Image 1 (cartoon, rainbow, N blue to C red):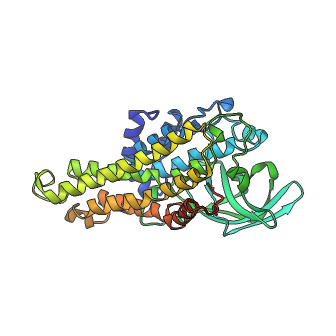
Image 2 (spheres, rainbow, N blue to C red):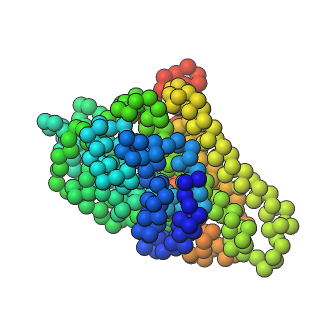
Image 3 (tube, rainbow, N blue to C red):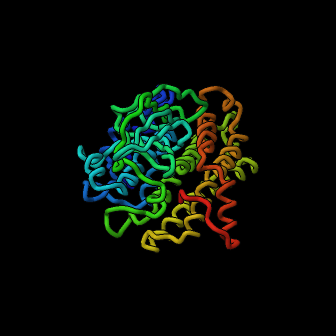
Length: 370
């Protein structure tokens, strides 16, 4: 694990502050930067670790065991350096000009975007929601559809957009997932864009290695893996008796229903972790070039994590005791955080199940974000 014990303790200590402020503490960002968290996917040619997904996501889980908001938002920020590594060399040189720890937020949903093709690039404007960690970043990756060409991601520097404070939510408050707004069209050069099919076909400029893995196979895990850490956090609250509202100090070690629920919740978290690690181990064994069927399978498996973690939290919430109904209770906060994660479109398994089953039955793939 690359994250130091001191940093993990700091994450835990600043969690309540972040939830109230609706943004992550700058001290936490600085500590994770010092530990190299943001350079994990940065190319070695730019001073990064060019690391394996398995190691990154185990770190994300460890952070989430202290604070899911920190793991969610800064995990998403950190994973974007993988996408930058797949873009043109001159773009990488710009983004990593100040070092390997680039801070980039995102909002890929193109619904509020207007993109007009012009010579050498695109004129972009609009509004994008759920840009986690954006207050700490100096770039944003924004989704949009170019008429006649299709979906692209646009890399925009912070000076070209404003952040609107919209993040008033029932959970994950610390992520600061505010709106990105570009009121008047700004020019985005072509080399600051990433075409969907380039991501699908894993086009990159790094040579053989980790970046042969399609971009989506990294991103689809960053928006649900922190929920696994939240379940483990909830189990720790049970163990330390913070969540269990009872005057009987032996209830959680003697009541059969309590024991059964704790075991099932812990197993759900372990299964979700094991499936994730197995998927990346298989991808690594294929030299980071999984088959299309495997890509569809792994996408579906990733989408199930939210439901599995909600199931685990519901098992625990039913035995959390009377104190859990009060606003500000740590256990209730975790319960809301995990449900918030399930709202992300990548964590709704219905469409991914259909695509996976269709391919198993000999059909064609219908998903280009794999």
